[in-house]
Length: 368
Image 1 (cartoon, rainbow, N blue to C red):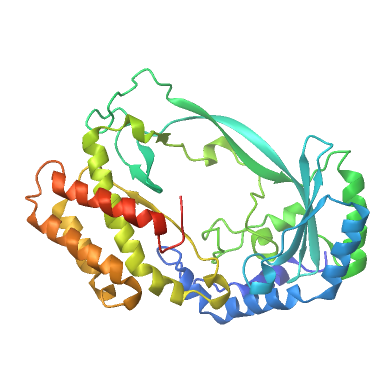
Image 2 (cartoon, rainbow, N blue to C red; image 1 turned 90 degrees about the horizontal axis):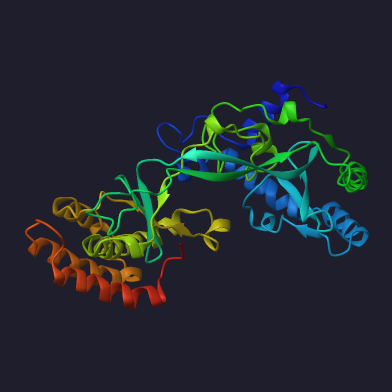
């Protein structure tokens, strides 16, 4: 190795700020304002212009026609990863894929291949359901008769789940490809292969896009945080929650979800322009949100009015005029409700009409 562990950690801290925005939760905006993050974005953009990378990619593509996929198209915008990345599709070997990643922060590269582990886990005593493009987490039993129309008491309480991780121990049919391309990488960049016992070392006090403090490894910082670098142990994998189809929900619960979905759509739409403006320029075009929320299965008048009131600073934005008008309509319906039992029919009907018209041309880029 060209560096000892101390050298590598010092290098990481040049591009990933220590103990910034990670006190209670990871604050991406705070980290993105640091000198270290600016240095990382600049390194990505500069790397995208390196002709050595483009020339090597062409040579490998000619050697293995139709097999190479460039995984680094994001670099020119300054987003994602700290490496050049490409895959070789070994379709004739049961569809396996070889990954090659070359760090542009340190003189190292890695080669790995995905593997899958299956484990049987007991389901948690809560459930989730997808409703109109939004995931709702419900901290109640999936047998709750007020929420589930036909509780299946005979349903198995265990489920087989799979997790993917990477291996650096390549199979005999993968090794010839890896050997030829490794020679190309070393000749092009003058780098060497980083060993797993170095790359999997945990890095203290930093977070990455997909890793929270305590989970970040050298591989995440010097290459990419999109892979699981260590084979997961069943004890480390959290128990999954049951998924309940909306067709199994009671009418009362569907009414609650209809109002909540409209409420959250208004909130996201009002906040979205301000959220995007806070993002670094390279990330604005691809910005998206995954809509999810938690509910106990009931509407709470005081909580809804409190959350609607918190949206008022966004009321005057010309970008959110339509959502602002909808918020005021919902606010009036909630204020007129006595807060007892299921939501009134007028409120549910309004929320349903709002969603039917809104979700056809939704403003925020939302993924379900």
